[in-house]
Length: 487
Image 1 (cartoon, rainbow, N blue to C red):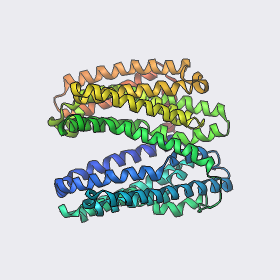
Image 2 (cartoon, rainbow, N blue to C red):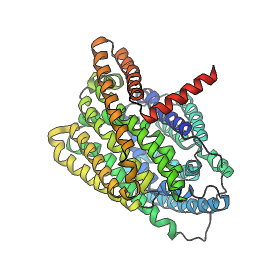
Image 3 (cartoon, rainbow, N blue to C red):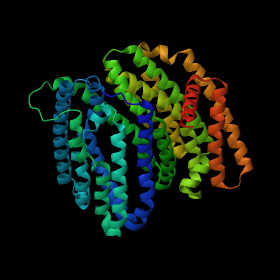
Image 4 (cartoon, rainbow, N blue to C red):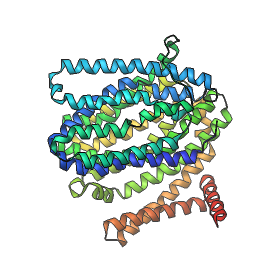
C-alpha cells in the first residue's frame, strides 16, 4: 500500500475542519434571518432528536474499525472479510436505531409536530452507515475525503441560497444539511471497492467484535454527556442569556481544539497499524513526534487565545457577548490536558485494546463535570461551566496516563518532551509580550488582532529556533530546502 504523508494528511484534515467550521458561519446569518425563530427552532430541535439515534446506529464501530482494520489493510482478503463483518453489525444497529426512532415518534405525541423534519434528518442514519468512512481512515485517504467534502459543501451553499427563501422553507434547509453532511456517502459506497469489497455476511463470529464495540459505544455516550452537560445544566439552573454567553466561549474553544487536533486524528490509523503489528519502535517514534508537536501547538494556541479573548469575542459575536471573555480565558487552561488525554486514549489505550479504561476515564470525568457544575453554577454562572471543563480534562488525563504509563512512560517522561515543554513556555512568554505591545500600539480591533497573531507566530517560531528545539529546526530546514529547490 502506498505510504501517505502524515503532514499532508494533517494539512488536508485541517482544511476539512476549517470548511466544516466555515459552512455554518457563512450560512447561519442568512438562514436565521430567512427562517426566523420558529423555523430555526423546528430545525434545531429535530436535528438534536435525530443525533441520539445517529449515536445508537454508530455504536463504537468507527473507532473499533479503524483500530482493527489498520492491522489488516495490507491483506485485501482479510480486510474485506473484516469490513463486511463490521458493516453487517452496523446495518443491524442502524435497523435497531430506526425502530427505536419510530417507536419514539409513536409514543411521544409532541414529536408529531416535527415529524417531517425529523424524518428528513433521519436519512443521515442510513447514509452514514453505507458511507463506511472508517475505511478511508484505515487507508489514510484524506485527499479523497477532503475533496469530496469541499465539493458537496459548495453545492450545498448554492442550493441554500437558491431554495431557502422564506420561513416555510425549513424542510428544504434540513434536506440541504443532510445532503451536505452525508450526500457524498453514496459515492463512498461505490468508491470504497478500490480498497476492499464489502458485502453483508450472515455467518460469522460476531462476539469477537461486539464486546469492544459496546465498550466504545458506552464511552461515546459518556463523552456526549460530558460535552453537553455544561450547557444543559446552565439551561436548567440559569437562563437563556447565560447559555448564550457560554455557547460563544465554548464554540471558540471547540473550534481551536479541532484545528489543533487535526494532526492527531490523521495519525491514529498509522499508530493503530504499527501497534497491532507489534512494530513498537516505529510506533513510539511517531508517538514521540506527535506528542512533542502537539505540545508545540497547544501551548501557544491557548496563550494566544487567552491574550486575544476579548478581541475574538468582539469580532465573532459583538459587544453583547463580552461577558464570554472570562469563561473563554478559563477554558484556555484545558487545551494541554485535553490534547494529552486524547493522545493517551485514541493513540495508546484503544490500539492496546484497553478501551475499558477509556470508558472509565470518560465516565469519571463526566460525573466530575456534572458534580462541579451542580455545585458552582448557582454562584459562578458560565465561569463554573468553564472551570469544571478544565478539571474534567485534567481528571481524564491523569486517569488515562495511569493506565498507559507501563506502555509509554519513556515517551511522556523523556528529557526531550521536557525540553519541548520548557522551550514552548519561553516562546509563549514572547507571545504575551507581542500581544501587550499590539494592544498598546493599535486602536483598530481588526488590525490589533491580525498583527498580534502574525507577530506572535514569528516571535514564537524564532524563539524555538534560537533555543534549538529539535522539531522546529527540522521543519525550518526542510522548508528552507524546499524553498531553495524551487529557485
